[in-house]
Length: 331
Image 1 (cartoon, rainbow, N blue to C red):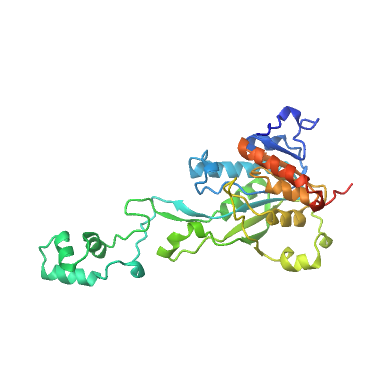
Image 2 (image 1 turned 135 degrees about the vertical axis):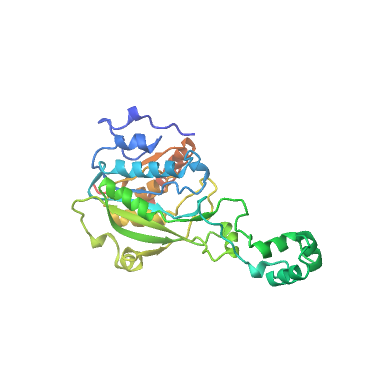
């Protein structure tokens, strides 16, 4: 495992040096970034969906406190006219004990053809029969009789806490506004259906999860617009398009939630210039840092997990060993 870079060995000024991965809590390390030195901070935070790397977030309040504070800490380090970009998805399984149980008659999946009317008809003729006796007459299970009479075919189980979809974009915007950032743009990343997790959708009308949001916040100041950063074809294909179709990473074998290299590459091309510094305070496997290197930018990466920090450093080392794929920085 690679050795974490101690804070005492950062830039001579005492600030975190560029082109390094720092292992630790970003809430402690972001204040060590030089003021107004970051052109773009680009990151994907924990989504509060039960991933292993989110285990330290016990409650939804913990999650809100984390994301809100990290956004707030950025206002001093993003340069005027610079950008804060957050890749995040809505919480599809947000546990809400106050939500009524969703009941559904999944007609196509019934193992028994016995209907509610059938049960009521037998029950009317034999009012003293128990549920078990009714089931014997109808030739079905007593659970079927119970479901037909009481409508307790509840998604997720009779006693499980119900889940709903929690839209998080409004929360993120509010935290950014409170910090001093303004929503400049938003894009939709269409990846591909999460088939591994979509079996439950056959029991409801809910859609398969196949997109995430990119919220782009601006810090007041002059933003230089240069059309020559992209080719005319790039502008036509994705530079001026709100919906991006980029396949997701097919093998998350070394990290649970990697995004594809193409995603940060596009954002870095659009919102930064050569030699700018790009920050990712949730660097994970190092994708943002690799994208910065490939596009001729500098990077600062922060990662809480020692294991993932080591993974990011290895990825950067591998990227630097492929110089033909790297844009030369402006001198």
